[in-house]
Length: 149
Image 1 (cartoon, rainbow, N blue to C red):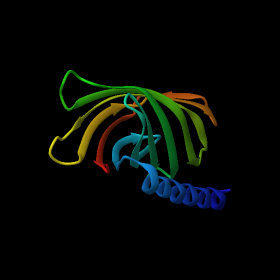
Image 2: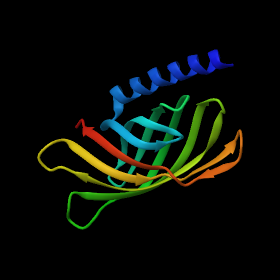
Image 3: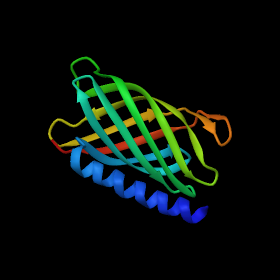
Image 4: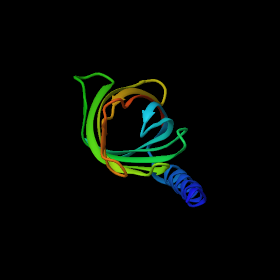
């Protein structure tokens, strides 16, 4: 079982990295509690002016985690470089124990006007359905991403 999880984690990592390189508008890192891990590759894919997909591939806690969150609310705060976002989506952890559930997301970020850098803070509560049903409200994180376009 552990060999399968290690191979699956590697395949997911490579697939996620390939997706980042091909279509992401922002790529970076997320530090903090990410699906039970402590660091993640972080990417944002725009779906329109006020909607996006926020994906993370996390590692560091005995396995690999994937969060793929849809942010249907992504808006500027007044006329500043600050934005806020709300979202939800599936969450998967390939490790021991295996976890499958859903995550929510509430965050704010700052887009530097002169350099292609975005820094944000967010909160991600997790509701895990499988293997054990639990709720984790400690998903705070710091996002640092590079804008590609």
